[in-house]
Image 1 (cartoon, rainbow, N blue to C red):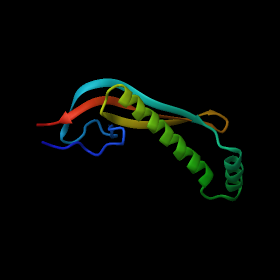
Image 2: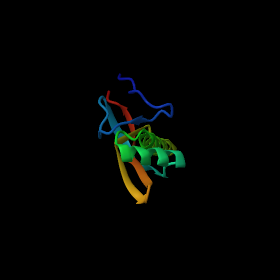
Image 3: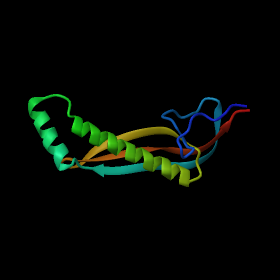
Length: 118
C-alpha cells in the first residue's frame, strides 16, 4: 500500500495538477480559496519608486508579493482542512490591481479527500 505524499503541517497535500500519483479522489469537498489585498508599506513604496527610476529588480515589491501569495495560500489550505479535505488539487493563483498600488492575490483550488490506490 502506498504511503501518503508529503503534506503540509496541516496534513493537506497541495498540487497544481488534478491528480496525485498513486491516489484516487474519493470525495469532492468543493472550491477553496484564499484572498488578500496588499499595498506596499511606505518604505517599500519609497524603495520601489527609486528602483523604478534607476531600473533593476524591485526587491521590496517582490517581497510584498511573495508575502501576499503565501498568505493567500495559507488561507486556502486552512479553508480546505476546515472542510475535511486532505488535499487540494488544481491549485492556481490570480492577481489583479484593486486600486492604485493595492494588489489582490487569490489562491484557489478544489478541496478533495484522497486515498491510496490499493
